[in-house]
Length: 240
Ligand SMILES: *[C@@H]1O[C@H](CO)[C@@H](O)[C@H](O)[C@H]1NC(C)=O
Ligand SMILES: *[C@@H]1O[C@H](CO)[C@@H](O)[C@H](O)[C@H]1NC(C)=O
Ligand SMILES: *[C@@H]1O[C@H](CO)[C@@H](O)[C@H](O)[C@H]1NC(C)=O
Image 1 (cartoon, rainbow, N blue to C red):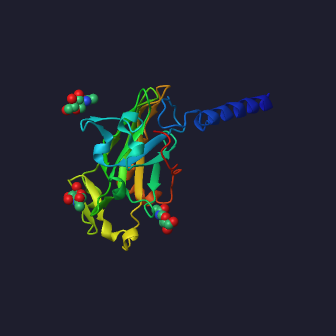
Image 2 (image 1 turned 135 degrees about the vertical axis):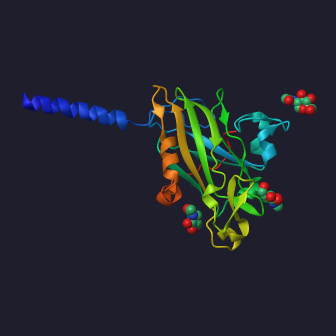
Image 3 (image 1 turned 90 degrees about the vertical axis):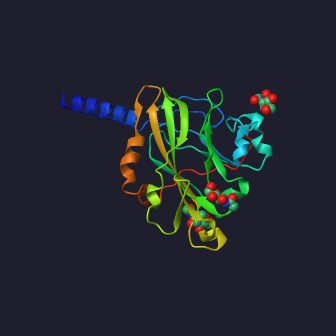
């Protein structure tokens, strides 16, 4: 009897583990396809680099970089694809030792989906004078479908009193490009993109890594996670 109970307990325990640490059940790997996710799935999205105007049709309507009407693939652009785990705090990095965002137009847009395409507003990354290296991207889901992507900014709070950083337009902390390693300076100007998930997955479970980011911000997430790198990048294009 005692043994049976133990076995039963073990079974429930394993089942519990399986639900908590369950495999990635999302089999959609293209950032230009639709999917619905549950917590702990992998989720594929892209970040495109181009000039600001290249993200707009007719200079007025912002389209997803997957939309062929933008013809991003024939303009001066670059694409990175990421697959973080849903609701896990991740820091994505893009190494700029051989990739200089200002030579590809200097703006970036995060995107995923097709019929239900979501794209972030274009964010300034770099021009010949300044480079912004630290970003927070919020991925907002509704019943498991990506609903919104946006950049969360802290109004330059993180560079207050730091002499090597400049606050641009009251929203972005930027380095002078002349201080970057690839320009002979001493700063590694690689891009770091902090991810936060919010909303609900397809089982209506609440995604709340967002709250962890908010709480951790005061302890400087970049310090904590400087060694954490999510799978970088598949270069490039054919997706468009
Ligand atoms: C693009 O702009 C032109 C001129 O302003 C306008 O006639 C045309 O309808 C616009 N096309 C779209 C798809 O908005
Ligand atoms: C970027 O790549 C260079 C050269 O491979 C390396 O020295 C540097 O540490 C990398 N930076 C990051 C943040 O990974
Ligand atoms: C670079 O961007 C900053 C911030 O938007 C702007 O003030 C500056 O004039 C730009 N410099 C060049 C060379 O485009």
